Image (cartoon, rainbow, N blue to C red):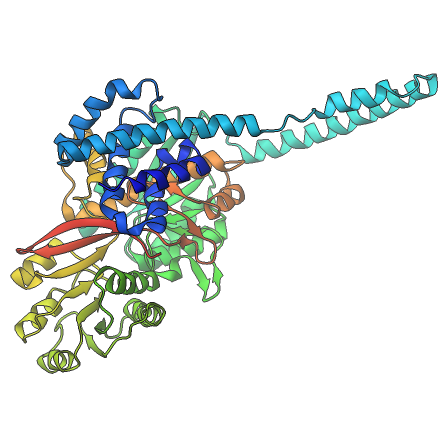
Length: 526
């Protein structure tokens, strides 16, 4: 193991303090910027930190050595670390904890002590001659100050009456398709949202108030959905709304949210119209947690050039799809930035995949890879036809499902897929275990991404309420927009104020071999 990484991590801890150790994702990203070649050590250190934090937070330096043996054993048992690797990880964590404490103490000693405002005023007054005129003037000024304070106190009471809800509950709308063919998926997401609310309430709620999830069935018809949402939001009895609906419905819900000035979080949406009123103007009250199509193109180009060291791909995108076209434009622009370029481009349709002539064009172009810019997990026919017509190179795609793996069979082998989250990610095992313990059922792989995002949506809303000065529209809107480095289950979230979507968020990397998908790691463009 490379001990240089511990020294670099120590420098970061001295700079940011112990809080950095409580966010292994952020520490990992910072270490990748400083010493990307030590990826193995970064992986081991960050997962060791996560194991340590499971015991209820960062331990004190004096108590950790006594438990280090137990932590090392858990690393071996739970994560498959070797004994040498686990001992190195535990030693590194202990050293970083001690450095963090030293950094906090040195920071406190560097703080310059300033005299308070009131002592300063009293010193000045003490040096002035105590005349009767001065005393009368001081009395008048004091009375005037008290009058001003009374006025402001009255205004404050009036404002807080309109900002804070009178009850001890905070209502959050949960909008989903809870009837019809999409009902099973909607109910699973609702359960995850309720689990998040129960966990937050068990920890004391938000500023002493409990979160109440109010679920409502939203019609699949856009017109009916708009009418239903407008009726719900008009009452203004909910602080915010979370939608797990389909994107055409999310677009009309976003219109209603702007009219009724109620923040709306579309947890799974990846299309810009949900949060953008026009090309350069975001909707005031709508936000997304999933990355958009343009980011998919960028992250695919980054992995191709930096992860696989390929620079001459064949580009395959879906005909007549705005999302696939947006991903294509972003991919081409990013490839130019990263020093590569697509050597050929072909289109595909959902029904037919790519034909023989298109595959022959890819083979004759000298492409070192094939990149499928699919916006939905329905590219199984594309993969099957690429292999059937003789393409044997590496394949990269942007969405994956069990049905797609089943339809492609062994043709899926030697392909890479970038997805928002994957159930085999070690960091997401605790979420799945909590869901299984609470509801006595497992989350299906097809529902995993949406269920996880519904859970994290409630956690994001709770964080927004913690930071906001009130529980109503305008205060929450600004708090949503200022979200930065929020550690959620699936990634660390920072909001891009230009699009109201995530900025440079990590994605999950999956490799397919032997007819199945295998989680590799989470990553994001640098």
